[in-house]
Image: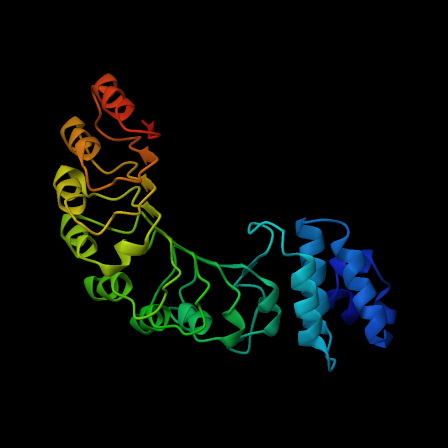
Length: 292
């Protein structure tokens, strides 16, 4: 009984541990519906993860499809798993419970191959967001990501606190897959003027709706390089928080005619001395929200 209680935690709110393995398929589906009925909360999400990880039964993937249909409206923040969870990453592979997830987090990992595992797994096909925070990313991992045939639904790539080599950035900025990627976040990722030049000629820019380069060092020169690019026609949201940009660079950006669809621009924590000038320029742009 002790081992069973270690295996199950959240699931025990719905069923006694000694009854779980004796349920019929019909009873199992009823249990899923009972869990989902309680709504999109971390507790219910973790109960589902426990349920699918522990059960070994013939119709498991059919039940995953059934469950995905039940939780289709659950928010991404709930339907996210962590690479550190044993129920997600086991014996060097992703488990099939990730088929329920829409997002996966890799946090403070020194194993540079985590991204390789995710990008190479057929169980990653439903992911729409990958977040990597202060973790190692190998060259193999970046190659696997940029060419993954399984991440065709990936919409958001969120990298934070990761300094990537020019070679890795070249691979990321010019993927052979990732056609659905719309939001790229490179927060505190060592993006300087030279690396801004790599980004400015990236074919990835043409498909982005959102770009976050906050807490980098692109400066006024980087602004000039990046936003004279002709590859940003669809960009709607841009975050350049804390990038050593002065009024000169901000004015250049607000006068830029290469961003016709921009609706939100964040320039907070920069070297701005004349915010009234910037707000006046922003007011001339239709539907542009300026955040200083």
